[in-house]
Structure formats: structure tokens, C-alpha cells
Image 1 (cartoon, rainbow, N blue to C red):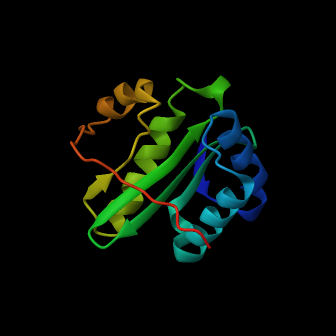
Image 2: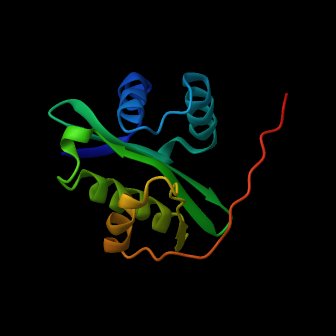
Length: 137
């Protein structure tokens, strides 16, 4: 398996993975978020490729001394095979190369079954309340 930076030709494969795993919000939001991150720092959008096919994706970002990753997704039929672990290890390596040692992730409360995965990677549950508001345009 190969973990590599995102290429433009990967877009339809990763949006399909996001759709299959329930991480898509809307095509417009996904495209805008991805385009913004690619413009900001394209090296932090990484894909897993197996036998020439994109099977996983993770999107990271750095804000000062903190790093975040989100939209970690693996094709449903490939989950449990270590691809997610490899993607997390790869993005963490990129963060360390940039001098960032503190990583934060957010997990949707509607997806508690993912918690054991992150706990097994050494992440700890923090007690934060996240508030959000959609601003109309």
C-alpha cells in the first residue's frame, strides 16, 4: 500500500469514499473545503492507494502550534485492514516534520463506535463543548 499526497485526479475517488462512509455534507461544501485546504497546504491532504485504487483519505491542517485532522475515511470494505492507522501515522509524521506536537481531532457524537480506534492510537477524550453557527451569506 502507498500513502501519498493528494492529486487532482483523486477528487472523485475521495468524495465517493466520503459518501460511502457518511462524511459528505454536500458536494459543494466538500469541494470548497478541499479546495481551501489544498490552497492552504496541499501536503496535508493524503490518500491511501492500493493496487492503483484510492482506498482512504485524511485531511490535516495546522493552526499555530496545534494540528488537526479530519475526514479520515477508508472504503467500507477495506476498514479494519490497517489503512486508517497508516493514514493517521502518515499525517502525524507530517505534523512532526513541521514542528507540531499537539494533535486535536473531533469525532461526531453520532459516531461513538470510532472512539476505540482513536483510543488505540493513543488519543485521549477531552471534555470540550463545541458550539457552531451557520452564518447566512
